[in-house]
Amino acid sequence: MGIFEFILMSFPILLAIAVVFVRDLLAATVVFLVYSLIMAIVFTQLKAPDVALTEAAVGAGITTLLFIVTIAKTTRREEDD
Image 1 (cartoon, helix red, strand yellow):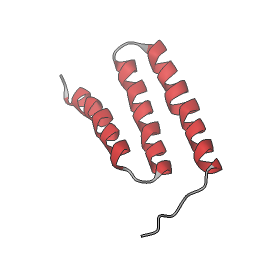
Image 2 (cartoon, rainbow, N blue to C red):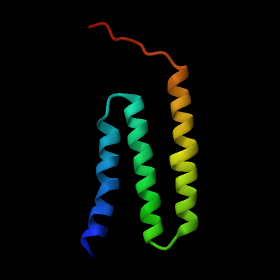
Image 3 (cartoon, rainbow, N blue to C red):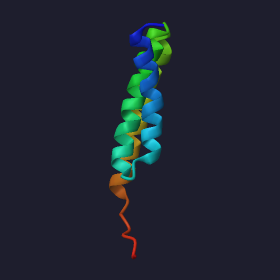
Image 4 (cartoon, rainbow, N blue to C red):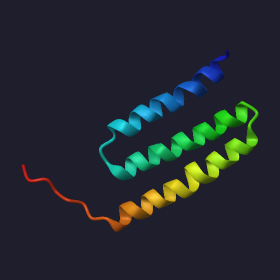
């Protein structure tokens, strides 16, 4: 395994951990968008262009758009400490 493959395989792991620990919903959505795009690149490297195209369209495109629209339509509650 070359250095490019190692870096490419470590990005999804790091991004998945980052999504869990990010407190802002919009930032978590952007991290999820990057995760989906990296996974599309991984699928392309694995010679699965149909899966890569589906991941890019559904994971990075439609799902992210739905998350952003949902976040925009909700209100933020402030916690009283």
